[in-house]
Length: 353
Ligand SMILES: Cc1ncc(C[n+]2csc(CCOP(=O)(O)OP(=O)(O)O)c2C)c(N)n1
Ligand code: SF4
Ligand SMILES: [Mg+2]
Image (cartoon, rainbow, N blue to C red; front, side, top):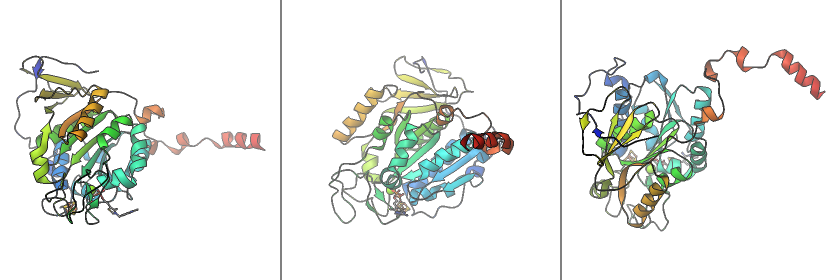
């Protein structure tokens, strides 16, 4: 499944003008953002563009999915030449299952908000993970409903204050804990201001076979960036405590540089790529489910903002394998292969007569 070795990531390379598909970065961009200046969501868009470009993902093979909210608008701001479905509020997860059933070769990239996912869309979200629908599912978590003027969302921390000073009396939903509980096998937490961590986490998610959930704290500068908010830039910058220094090594690259044994862990991904985790004073091993849950409990209790790869397991079969779908996507099968012939229908009808 995964293993420790005695090597570390290769030295950093210069940014590429073109990727292995001979495409430039600009091909991975979309429309200009209409979000507020400084919104965390725009930084996440930048990280998504970089990750897709550097992972050589063919734009025409991506399905961009979202629900409703400022966060859900962001799929318009990357990959201007891909498939896209901006669904209704909280229904992105169900759409993702449908897209995958229709064309299992498409790469689902979903962007949602904390309101979209953890309130109105919660049921859909849970079943998506339970069924292991292949998707990179990003929650742009600002602890509020940004689009509708900053009401507390279900991920707002108990005791945090909104812009008007009202204190939230309710315990939050922990998206990462919920994801692990529902069987999700790639679970990460990050911060929109930490591109160095977010880009490799996204690349790892793209190499994962199944649902990959990234809960990314993404400050709303207009409605939730004041003192007393636990999803503001000052709070996140001061409190962010990365579990490890994370790197991504694609399957076609050798790991070359030596390092001290015991300091770096490698996590093997489905396509042969690897995530490297260099210790930063924490003992967390993302390959242990119970340890991941304990870590999240401790983070809530001690009000820690721990970021990085929380949990990974090659785990269960993705939805298409569970359904035993044929290799050829249903969307491109000819009618003769998806409809029973008239003779079969006639026979069924005669049995019912
Ligand atoms: C069925 C339905 N109910 C309510 C709304 C109103 N509404 C629009 S966006 C939103 C919340 C968005 O919050 P979030 O998902 O956190 O996104 P953000 O704007 O914070 O990025 C709500 C309640 C709606 N559009 N549709
Ligand atoms: S209202 Fe908040 S979440 Fe929406 S675009 Fe502005 S800063 Fe971003
Ligand atoms: Mg929100």
